[in-house]
Length: 125
Image (cartoon, rainbow, N blue to C red; front, top):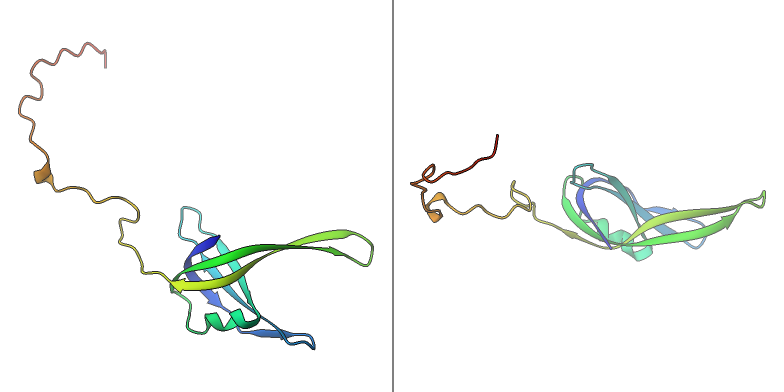
């Protein structure tokens, strides 16, 4: 799966525990009708992939959805999801027209000369 948008924030690498587990977070804001701020985490050696990226850049991030189960001290089972990135690449910004196909020039259309001739339209409106 992938997330595409503009980088809102690139966090610092964090190290946890005695085994040196590393994690780094990035927030990508999608560019759609209702923009979403998607937090993606990169772990271990993947943290270094973010070194050359900064806020404002357009990117495409390849992700995996991860889920885990945890039983709290009261014996209740809880479930957690995370979005884990494994590749990131810069994307060139598209033209202002977005995904709209280009409109052919007006010369490509033949002008209409008999617009109202033979107009037998009997519709009441």
